[in-house]
Image 1: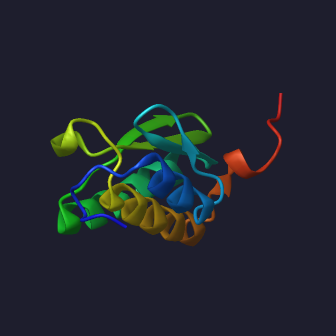
Image 2: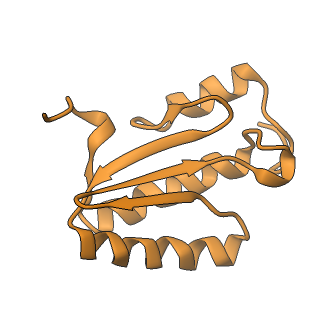
Length: 111
């Protein structure tokens, strides 16, 4: 895989996504949503933000009632996907599991 801040090739992105079930590519961003109660989502955001501060890489986070969505791209690389994005996604997956957030992208949508 390329240097942490170097944009990845399409093949590298496909390989990285294959190792992260539930994450989806949306243009030059990877995304994942989880079901979680609102206040649990706030706690999860604080946990993710602490990790982001340490690694100097940040996700776009959208918290709604019962749902949290993460979108990751490397702003400093021209909003392109880099190895740092996939590293952050792995850490978000670990945090989501610790907060017992339900991965919505791994199961059929509920209506």
